[in-house]
Image (cartoon, rainbow, N blue to C red; front, side):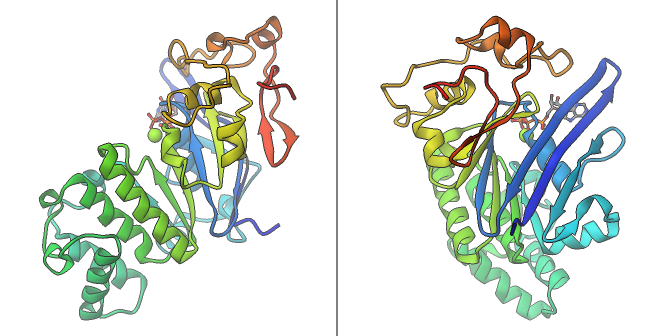
Length: 324
Ligand SMILES: Nc1ncnc2c1ncn2[C@@H]1O[C@H](COP(=O)(O)OP(=O)(O)OP(=O)(O)O)[C@@H](O)[C@H]1O
Ligand SMILES: [Mg+2]
């Protein structure tokens, strides 16, 4: 198996004063070199905790994490020390966060921040780093990169700042980038432009990408495969096209129904009612049963298993849409 990242049975809990929050409940996922996968689900379903756990960036305490397997590029991440992880995070995996203003240093020009990235991870001199940084800004479509190099983060628009974060993530030529809601803070037109840049660099560099979002329309032109998460569990996994044309989980269909143009009119139209249950009080049986139009007694009583349904698809549902 030539997986770049392989995660099996990842669990993360947060013991809190009000009880134990089971944020991630046995997640399995894998990413091949150069592949783009998406993790999709509503707020609070465990997307960010999953990605932080995979980079071993969760602070413990409060987080308690365990997994049967977590290998990246042939290395067992579970056994690596923080010092070894620092090396991997700097060189082979990097992360793009949602909020560029917090991710960037406000008192350093963006040029200097890029320079430092190049100098820390390559043998470049300051002068070489400066021209690499200007080139990196050019590649992510920052206009007038020679001038913008001297700007501080607050002098750039949100879209431009996000491009700088993308430039920083690709600067070290990592094998894997995890982008957690990279465009959520941007308006729709800018969002599309930034996603285009991300996709272009991902393809050109052959970088594997984990794209995390609550918005299925974001993944429509990007991902090869999609994992749908609900209340800390994967509920459906499918190649992108199959997921969009034939969603099997009512939750996936609910997410799709909020994406304009993409929902097939012949599908049953299901809006997801109510809110995500509290992580301290998850429902019995299938966690989605309280919001599901197809709920039966069995759904209230028994958690469905994540089952291989063929065609590179996995499903956790007693009553799949469109039959088995
Ligand atoms: N430090 C913490 N202490 C207690 N609970 C936490 C902590 N961090 C996260 N959680 C809980 O873990 C669950 C998963 O959170 P996570 O941030 O992964 O959600 P998410 O899917 O990324 O949501 P969003 O779309 O809002 O970013 C949530 O219920 C959250 O409240
Ligand atoms: Mg999040």
